[in-house]
Length: 187
Image 1: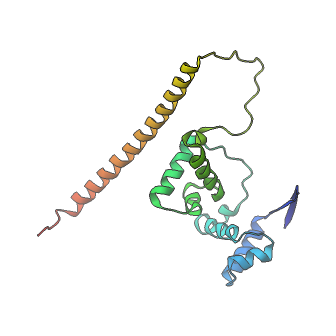
Image 2: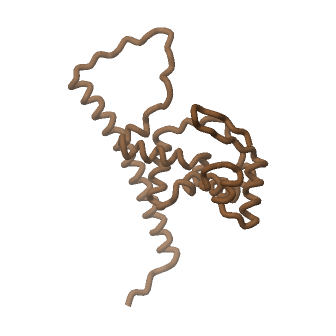
Image 3: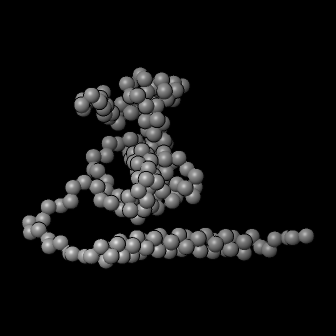
């Protein structure tokens, strides 16, 4: 087990082989809590996540992902809506959308609850440095608030439109299913 020390916090990185060894302990009948204690991680949920990833994707699901994925706001919203519509756990939602870390979805949910829709669409990290500074566009306070209001309204209309398309598709599917099954016998 490779331990990394960060300002009073120890993080352990696990190889695929070590993850498979932990999953073998699960197969032998140990609980995820006891396996977590044996390998030195404080979270049995990590073991459960490995088990779910292995079950759905095989060994490939256990591989360490080195690329930091930058998800777009629309995708985050789609994930949160799917989770809510299907009343699923963060773990199952992560598996469905092939997201490596279920806690990332939890973070998106908290941001959405605290900051609303805009919190999902903010870019992370530092803005890129430009060679020539852009001249700031000067708006009056009323123009700025109107611009912000229109952007928010535009975003909300896009979301509503996507939602209505999904509802319409679902209604079409149900109607096709009813036609396929034939007329129902009502007495």
